[in-house]
Length: 437
Image (cartoon, rainbow, N blue to C red; front, top):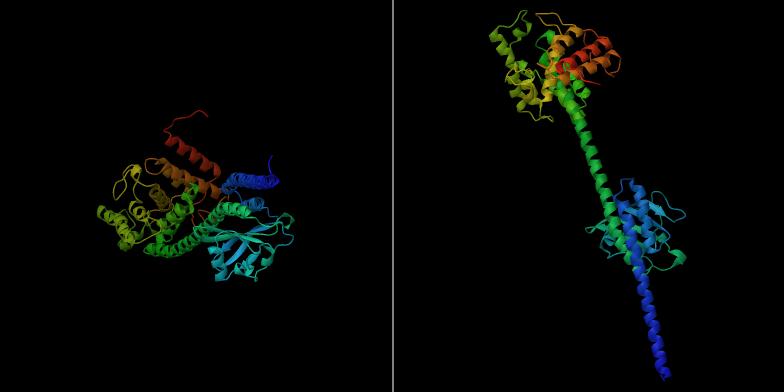
């Protein structure tokens, strides 16, 4: 028979044992819930959706893990130092956004604390200021969000169900989840910073391009001043080249490059004897060589200039090259000539043919396009010619916001005539072959 004293010891030990087992089971269940929450939270953190929606999901996960019924998820803004809410849940009245300015000592305390802290055991003034639009006394627990020791946000929790206290295991679960939430908040901050920098760079580039446009327009006017019959030529070539590039689907930077190259394509003519521009008859071989040298002289001029567009020097040098190798100065064939050069070369020829010269009257628009189509693809790039036809057709039906030929007197064509030229171009490019529909 077991003595009564022994029985009491055994009963007490069994009670302690049962209590320990119950605690272990509860801890294990909480751990499973935390792991389950992490599993559910993972796809939310990587989903392509508005961050505010993900922030609400993350806050709900933190409340579930800690047993809290109220909470606010803040991001940390460094300059000026403050907490700015991105999600709130459970509070009856909370500003949107809730903002809490921070002093350096608050930032230090939030950065250096080991993990989640209970404000009942610490003064809220240690971590938060009372100068914002939300009272720090609303919060019972703070969980700093840190990445590599850097503060990126704070999870501020209010009361728990039934005003229960926060247990140690609840704080541990909270700390575990906060690690992943902090990464999501940091990624969002990095993405926003990158987006701002890209936007700033684009604004700077737009400003720079605007500056270059204005400056290069002035250069284009100066280039053409030698002879009255070519006034406006370089400006028109820039506009035509940009329009062709636009019709080909090039991006804004490529279109800007074409426009600038068109402005500068004849810059070498500043070194050509002015008398050659007014000669009423054809140039003799020596005069032609002198005129042709404007391509290499222009190349030498622009090669030493740092443009935002690297193609400009070769466009200046090669804009008189032709697909069959009959051009100058290097006799290149089409495969050796970049598309930007072919576009400017076409724009240059189009304006030259439709403009008056001392030795001839301007060609009509119809005659010019017929001649260009006739020698394509032997001389000109077929895609560039097709793009030019597209823009001229838009002119004919009023589809261009700024007419391509607004300052030109070469005349206009009916849309049906342009469609006929486009069909003829396709016939020439295909070598007369027909294809089943």
